[in-house]
Image 1 (cartoon, rainbow over the protein chains, first blue to last red):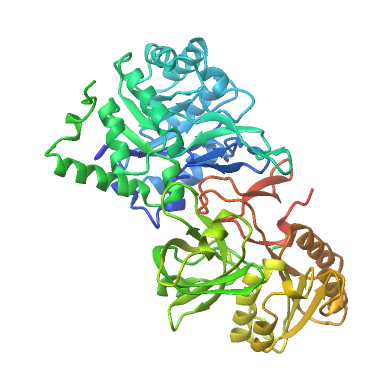
Image 2 (image 1 turned 45 degrees about the horizontal axis):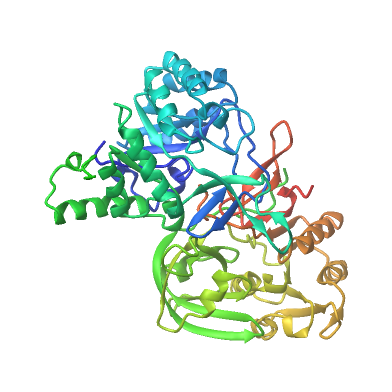
Length: 291
Length: 280
């Protein structure tokens, strides 16, 4: 990775959607949208709702499936030097394994991000990611199916995120991503209806940054594998906070919706901070917060 | 799938800090903002929208989509026309000449007006749907002349009929429908459409923007009367506006086994062929 800034899955499409605005070669890595074995339709609309400094979404991982990804989306991404990480989703362990197996054979995939934390699908995903057993089952099965680098994306909707973090590490995950969105909802007082057709959704954006930062800090102390920190990062200084808390890399998600070039501004912001504080290697920053 | 019209996005997108050059209240609660950006003004096509950051900071967090109402490429400006309905529009109308707003655009698909110089163009606007229809009317007149263009404008009452004078100034035929009969035909604009289509013979292209219920009826009429090309500009709540979040979807017919899928209004639309929309 040329820098520690990645895209958060589901906020940068498959790269092509934003390639006219963002130079993908400047990114540390690109994490593409959740990809399942077969096409998923996603949830009925309305799927999004804005809240103060936050965004609730219940997209439901609409995607055209792994074969479509390999055939129609991956070729575009191969022209860039930036590592491509594919976020994989499934209703069952077998589906995760099959997606991983097919991507293992595909040229131009650097790693997989195992999504066991999407709160918006009824079967699978978060159902695995809220327990140590479920996490271990998915991660160890995917580990056996591929030699690709594995990142496990953890859910914050648990009492103690270090338990699932350790389960992923023990099952062979090479790194962790945290956090996915926080379960929430919103109601329209005048219609007395939920604002999302799915009733609940996942909260992202600046509103969740303090929670994400706390969870990264807690997790760093209980695992040895690197952590990709995410949750509300919109600026270089936000990213610096995650690095200081111990994240080895960061991802920009909802920030891209607010400002399509947010990833690039985060990269430039990190450089500017390093210059101002006399830091020559970004690794010097990692975990250097003082208690 | 019949694919009579080609509405795909082909224009370049820009991220720009645009200066507000004019703010006018053109009717009760309806505002027009004119913004400066030569690139957006030159690239925009009728039906496309821009995504506007109506305030700095995180509240509101997301941009708000506004359809392009008019362009003036010579002066490098473009206009937005909007009803003040929520926080985004309230913030935008409160801005002053000289203020700068961040805008991404032009975005999405555009109305396809075709190449047939003899085609009849029937434009149906409901309420604030007149905003992009105004740009379209001007655009068709420049390309094909305005002799075959009719604009049907619908509203609840006379004071809510938008752009009447502007349409007349383009030189197109304008008919109005108001629910209370205070201006033009008393009834729905879709009733006007039905009777107007009966007077035409030859190639007809229908374009519409307005409330969903109205556009559903426009689609039904066009189907029943075998109008080959009916294009609708849809509006949904958007998060990113650039095709990545999948938040703004509508149900469309599809070749898959269920016969439908969700399509993004921001990039697959906002202009769709009426035949593409699954109204169930």
